[in-house]
Image 1 (cartoon, rainbow, N blue to C red):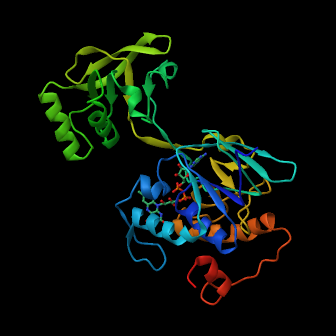
Image 2: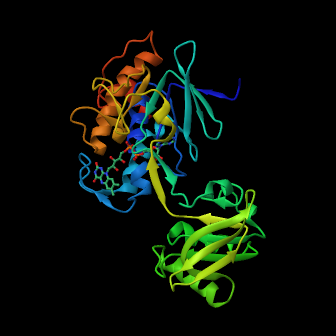
Length: 342
Ligand code: FAD
């Protein structure tokens, strides 16, 4: 079908190691598509420490997490990687010709001879409300992300959380909402001070409510939430009427669907050999933090090395009739043409 995307390599995870794999693959003439369930490129570097300096990238004495990601993006740009963000790699299936078909949570279908799992510590997924029955409301009146703001127009919204996501969505959705309440367990917020101040001003003007306490129960009918019980920090109990609950309790990492792909695992890491970082399933590779082998170090520089060796073997799968010639970027006009520098 025309909805199927065919490429050389599908990389699961757009972290630093997945990005460098695009570069190494590009030097060999291989095209890549990447899938990541974050809304941004850069994996842990971009999500967990964009402004913290890293000191052990070879020949870069100091750069922040985001600067590293920006540099990797610039380096792999000539090879035109295609990103499929906000979606999780869900299932894989081997096709008759030996290549793979991968389907994502958004229904994107990708086919390639080589699948590269560069999934770090797993997918970043939202921490869910740890209350019995919460899942019955999920995606109808309980949400862990906002995809379309219009969906929330005219709603009685309760936002839970004290970080940037919670505060940003309180401020963005308050003008659309019929009513807005923010609940956070402490009267102290991790979010940007400017956002906190704006929120407090809305509370002072009577345009929204702030409740300090913890959600203890959800009440509603079918999948429609009607109210939420809150145990207040002051020791009381409060029932807040709402038809929409948006919870922003941060992200955690979990291996997710990859765990059921038949790959040999060792404590949630994928076992590989160290010649090509191939798994026990031929054509499926694992590089970066997600892979394990004797002596493995969870460092970015190790992932870069793994990416380079993996591509040598992936080339043979993608171009079975071609011979791979070893070349330096400094002296090969072929590589320099691919890089667009001559
Ligand atoms: P990740 O960066 O974890 O990226 C993996 C990506 O895959 C994620 O975006 C995830 O959402 C995605 N993913 C996973 N499963 C799926 C799926 N099924 N579908 C779709 N997407 C999926 N290392 C150093 O070398 N030097 C340092 O100084 C250093 N400092 C650090 C400081 C902190 C605070 C932290 C947390 C880590 C630090 N690290 C450092 C470790 C470094 O960040 C990791 O080694 C590196 O990010 C691993 O890169 P990766 O590409 O393998 O995986």
